[in-house]
Length: 212
Image (cartoon, rainbow, N blue to C red):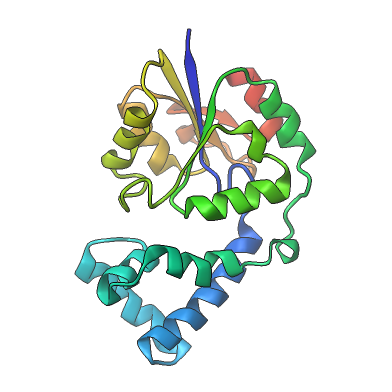
């Protein structure tokens, strides 16, 4: 059976708590300058812009409102994150050994910019294990859990008998399962709930070898 392995990045291929915190600090400074307002007002304005432009993603709302080049926004926000200050494991031996034992093409499927995913996975030593990085720009700014984003993955990678998808967010896994993908919920907290029965469940990355 020919299998495609699809991985979420943030919160799945690395612990993103530190990067989220630092990114938000950078983003609020950036948005404050762009909106010519205090950082305290940014959240309220961004919420209105997301509603106006029909998106849940702050960068996309700003991009559409001010007609800003997405790559420029990424360079001024995501790529300013200093990974060495975010508590990320580097190199990530556990994930490297696990992914190395999974035979078949592996792709990254992220709502963040693909350039940021490549930066993170280069830092953790995992880049070489993936054949494709599909981020927000490649997803035509649709993003998970929109059906369109899953269709794009399928269209980019045809000819597989099954797709195995690993993510830390159940709402994304639910859509994937509806499309016939085999779904694996990665939850390092290990909380046992009824959600485990909707998807295969792992609480440590090494357990992935048991379910794929």
